Every structure is written in C-alpha cells, then in structure tokens.
Amino acid sequence: MDYKYIEQLIERYLQCETTIHEERILREFFAQDDVPTHLKQWQSLFAAQHELSQAHLDADFNKRIMELTSTRVVTPRRITLYQRMRPLFRAAAIVAFAIVIGTVMNNPGNVSSESQSDMAHAEFVLESTTSAHPETYSAELVESAADSTSFIKVQTQEDMPMP
Amino acid sequence: MQEKTLQRDILPHRDKLYRLALSITLHTAEAEDVVQDTMMQAWNHRNEWDEIANMGGWLSQICRRLALDRRQRMDRMSSLPDPTQQADRHTAFTGSDITFEQRERLTTICDMMESLPPPQNDVIRLRDIEGMTYKDIANELSLTEEQVKVYLFRARQRIKTAYSKIENYGL
Image (cartoon, rainbow over all chains, first blue to last red; front, side, top):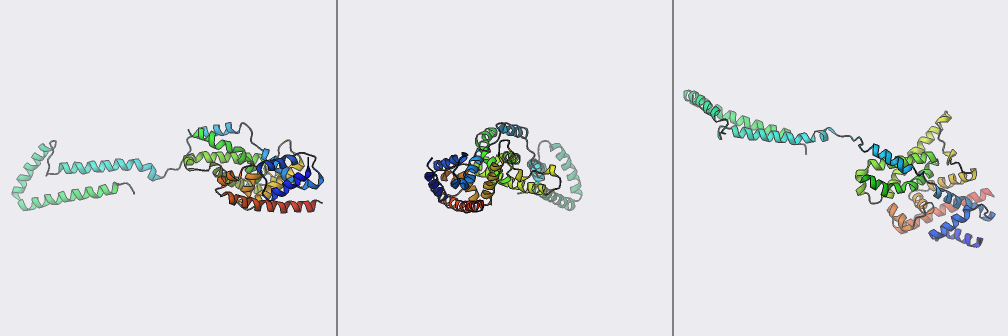
C-alpha cells in the first residue's frame, strides 16, 4: 500500500474534497491492524467511524415492533367532554326543531287534523266564556300565544352546538 | 395499511437511528431501548404520516430527543450510590467482541461528534458514519447542498484540531 496516497486522502478528507468512495478506502485502510506509526493518530478516527458504521440491531427487532404495535392498535386517546357530547348536539337540535314545528302546528291559527276534535271542544268552551267576558279572554289568548313562541326561541338557542 | 407503511418506510431506518442513539448514550442496550421508543412514538403519531415529507429526518429528531433524555437519566442514575441501578455510559458498547482500545476510540469519536453544534453533528454523522451523499444529507436535514458542505467543512476542521491535540499528547 502506498502511504503517500493515504496521506493525500487524509489531507483531502479534512478539506472535504474526498468522494464517498475515497472515504471508504480510508476507513478500510485504518480498519486493519498494521498501520504505520506516523499514521497511528488517524487510526482512532477512521477505525472508529468504521466500527460505528457497522453497529446494527438484532434481526428480531422488527418482529418485536410489529408485535408491540399490533397489541396497541387501540391506543388510549384523551377525549374532551365537548368531543364526547358532540353527537348529542345534533340530536338536541333535531328535538328542538321538532318542538318548534309541533308548536306551530298546534297553534290555533292552523288546526291539524289530530287535534281538530280537541280544538272544537276548546272553541266551544272559549266561545261560551268569551261571549260572557269578550274583552278579558281575547286579550289573554294573544298574550299566551306570544309567550309560548318566545319560550321556544330561547330553548333552541341554548341547544345549539358551540361554534 | 399503516402496518405496511411501518414496514416499508419506518423500520428500514432502524439501524441508522440505532447508531444515532448509540453515539449519544454510548450504551448498546440503552440505544436499543431508545430506538424501540422512537418506533412506538412514531406509531402513536401514525395519523400524521401522510403529512411528513421527510421520514428519516422526522424519526431522527424523535430519536435524538429520546436519546438525550435517556442520557440525562443515565447520568442521574450513575450518581446514585447503588451500583445495581447504574447503566454507566463509560462501561459503554458492552458487546462481547470489543477490545478496550476499540471502546476507547468509539467513545472518543461519539463524544466528539456530539460535542459539535447542530447541525454540524448531524452532517458529519450522516457523511462519515452513514456514508450518505451531500444531496441525501441536504434532503434529510432540510438544508441546501452548499450549506451541507460548509457545515461538514467546519466539523472536519474541528476534528482536525481535536486529533492533532491527541497526537501531541500521545507523543
């Protein structure tokens, strides 16, 4: 082996002018035992690089990781109260909507077929009482209708999901 | 699906990560634990894999952080009076077929690489231990090739100074 060549390679290595191939030559040269004394100091560098580059894990490492990951497919994840309740918000919105629709349908203005007999009975009672005291009862009826719709409005806003 | 990605894109980095963990902890068993923890952390973030362009760099960051934590813990343990609790960094590289001389020089080079400021330490490790091209190093560290050359030059100048000192003391 021509040591002049190795000395040149070391010089060029330190100047970052060596190729990957030339650097490999250096490491392999210093990996052998009989290195001339004047180059000994570089042996600890290049031989150590060589030894470290050979370090590797056991073959069964992959198997161990695959086993670990398959047993941990369901990883515990923190769920906030908001995330947990999220499906319920939609249900609550639907219920609130149904209540609004139901109230509108039951309004004395648009009489639905199911409550027609009830309404007829109520109208009969209403008529008999309002005819006795016309001013008092008609005013009360309007007031209560206004109250029930405004109550529903507040209710639906409370049940809306958070933005 | 994710098991396939694990096998194809993540597990092949294992030996590179092991050598990184080894050069920080200087301890084979601890380094192996670090790589295992790195893999498990990567697995726990598997929903983000699609967004990671540079898997090698991402894994190395996790591995370096875990290895540094481990080294700190080892240093704390070695100050304990109970010797059975110790995983001393300087009984390092406890492989069966390693000489005292080999252990000494491995410890020296690892300490030297890790004493360099980032990203010089990563650049010289990827070049001199992993034998990667400037282009691949630039990709892994999100640098330009020119930057890689500059950092490598600085790192090798530091190494030159350090090994000249060894030479002077040695003679």
